[in-house]
Length: 257
Image (cartoon, rainbow, N blue to C red):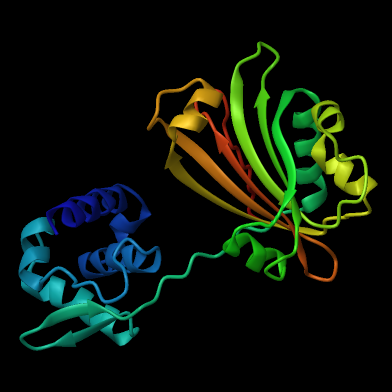
């Protein structure tokens, strides 16, 4: 709770220095608490700070703290029970950011053209259960598994890739994968991706991957898991990329329409 209160206090101070300074104190406090609930900072079922804690942290009256909490309850964001405190009733659900696929694919192809690619292994094998489920494969079905390492022009490895693909019939060799962007090879196999879902997270480098990327075991890596869909909605390609953040950055530019 102390860490949460400190974070909320920082947001409160920003609100007071901005346009929110013109609105009543209870509404400022309500807005800070509401934003923390809506963005998942205070998750579903978590206990809210008590009126006494709000009073002490934000230097407001008990009436101000109570009115802010009453506003949250009126919007069904929290439930208040005498003797049990207030708990969050709002379920935060991350919303995916959507963007045009064409530009993204072309950027990936361009990045591949300007990287040095080394294929560590290429096999046609039965994928693990979670990949089979994603690719809608039966227990004995095979998929192409490729492990690659990409380096910059200076020869510094910045990315480790593991991909699983179905529908490959030709031109998917070590030589081709090291000389041609993989997305171009998918197109040569009549695999035309119309949608990609990406999940970004952080992970730590295992000993094997650390050796491939030239980092210390346990070093922080950016993890990007990408699911490639065709027009009928089928997932035909699953790729996990692990990136050295010292050599690779994932940038997004967004604008308000």
